[in-house]
Image (cartoon, rainbow, N blue to C red; front, side, top):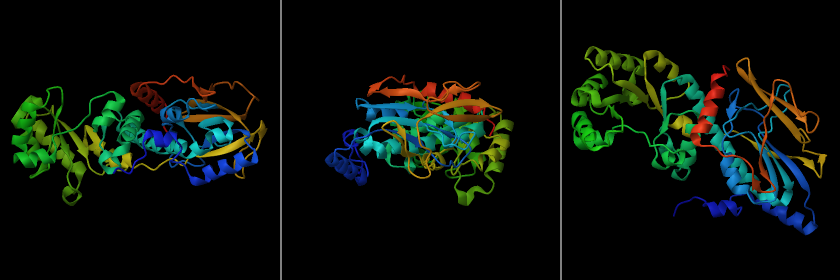
Length: 388
């Protein structure tokens, strides 16, 4: 058996924490079902900003329930706190408490992990600039969440994804290279790239791993000599025990390819890549990156859901800011800025736009869902304006 929850089990509330079910039972027996407003916030972020992702799954979970929901647009770059230190509500839910109580856990799960992955992908893509970043991380995570991982990574800025189901989710073809397994089974780099070039659809870029049996520069030259102009690139996935300076290997491979007439061959790097080592590889001339674990296993964003209003009156637990709020956003001076104002006090703030948009009104979907490409372009347009 697979240890995964299916859609019906999630919608049925089976992935919740038991204390919400017990709370429901007690409230029902006591005849209490207050109308409340609750906010999704995060007290602190690992980085100066995050990317909000996961809204479509919350819509799928909560639609047709008698609740109202407002949220940041999918792909919005956000901060944990506004200019005055007030936590930024990325979503607000309103309705009879029992109608959404047991769904707090899955709602948080949908946005905590997806936003963490998208944030890490965005930070790496911002570093890489116009260089290609491919998401290779699904093998490090449970296969049931491969579509979410690849979608979040793509929305965050990755140029492509490796999994079949992830690529289908974003409406693109999966991306990959000539793997070690093919080279080993074929008996060498030359035989493998020739077979790949002969059999695989011509629209698929020919990118060969060049660290299977021999020195990277010599295997790169063998691959380039074998199929010439058909070779799009080579990929360095050198094991850590053999690496030395991977940046110097990049420089050497590019030099040897260039002086041998193969300067059209791009050099990609994978294996243990993160924000710390990508700048050095960019300086060395790397043309692209295959990033796996650091994106797929990115730290989750610790969103919490807290009641802030009961029957129209501000009320929250200690450490939380009571009352519904209006939220406004702008990007200026290289940073994203938010202003949080008590609900109804101000409907406009000069130079800012309203940040929360209606998503569900009495269970009816009023949010216009966008394609993965549209959301990714929205993320990238924000990243261009952010320097910190």
